Length: 319
Image (cartoon, rainbow, N blue to C red; front, side, top):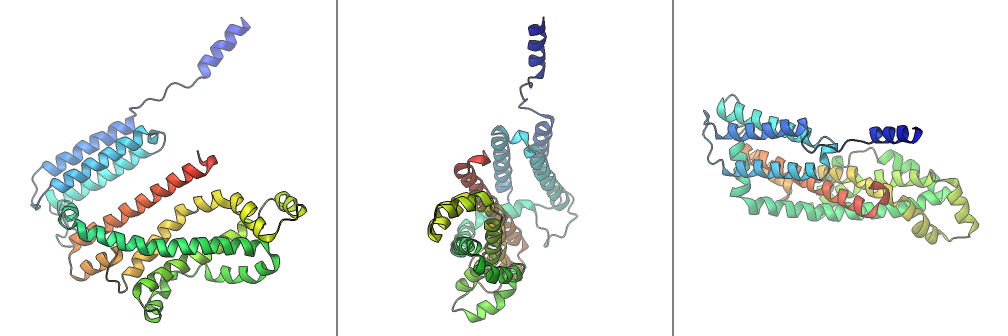
């Protein structure tokens, strides 16, 4: 009888299989249908074409279903999709169907998404230009700050000198240096790279020093007892030990670097996403401006996804 009671308790304690179709999924799907209907219903304002908007909505729905099926139903994937559909429905209804928004400052969503079809080469060219500068500034600053931070954190006397300097400079927004760097350096691209470098270097340096300083004393004592040299300690002990926190920190650092780059490109660049936005703002073409803003969001989302893949592939405890 005792065995039977234990078996019944075990069966009762087992979790029921998770349902694929949850109420949040149904709500998101209904809102997707409502978005399609809102686009199809003729409004007071007539867009040039609705095809790119339909394509964008279809791509968003496919991404939502893919993410939901891959395990996103355990989180808020469906709620995020619902929020996106509500935003698009509101934009479509108030701008196109009711014509209650300023026609210049808030363009029709159909016309905004048509920009991706009309000038794809210009958009992708500016994305490529921004990515080159981002890679140059971000990678060099991250590598330099991490290596220097490991050495500084490991050497107490050096740490006492460098850490106060980093503590003062880290909170200073790098974007304030942009006008001066544009005048000082030989080209705008060099100035943009330096802005990203300064914006990432000092916070990363300070963070790395603090991480080394807060390491488990037993690890440090064991390394000292083995008589390891400073380079060996840095590259064979400290770097592997801190690698997970360094990589996960990219989730915050990359969007920050992208923000600094876009703002720097607004000061006088001849290419890049920031240039694209500010150039069409100066011409009053807010349809292209909104498309550029959306493109920035797409790029940041892709970069965040790539960082997530890197974390999942290289950091075991993230799984």
